[in-house]
Image (cartoon, rainbow, N blue to C red; front, side, top):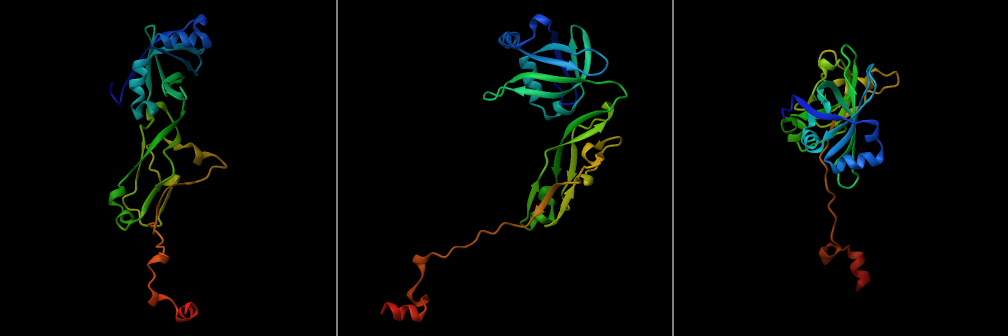
Length: 220
């Protein structure tokens, strides 16, 4: 499976195959219940092959790509919107997909990659790079959806701060938070000064010569 091309095969679920009991039966058959919604069409209840889905979930790009889901010979283009995992074992239990409608913008959370840390002057001077986001919500047409956003930190000095507005965006893509009236241009990464561990004196290592004369006299 290419990280730039994801195709999943699913089967249509009838009304009788929906509900908690039916979902448990599907999982015993190595199938994961899911749904495709959005656009002008009715929601489509489907089931995905567990091993195929688990393999796709290993790729970060799966969460920010247009996916092709074949259901009984019909191909749906969609993006993943929600994934429910088992709270203890972590395996997928249910997936929500949103249909792609040509010409209609979508909201997607896209990973943020920070590059150039080792080359940054701040790092070379002992600074600590602190990243405050792992992804941001973008708005764009499906054809312009980026796999990830890259932030070059190679020029950061100690005390430098980068904000959301410092992210270089592909054409046609905007950061949703910056478009809101009450949105804030929050910090996404900063270069903090080096941390210095305080040196504690060990009372047992103090020589008698280091004790003030007045204290020595008192002891005598």
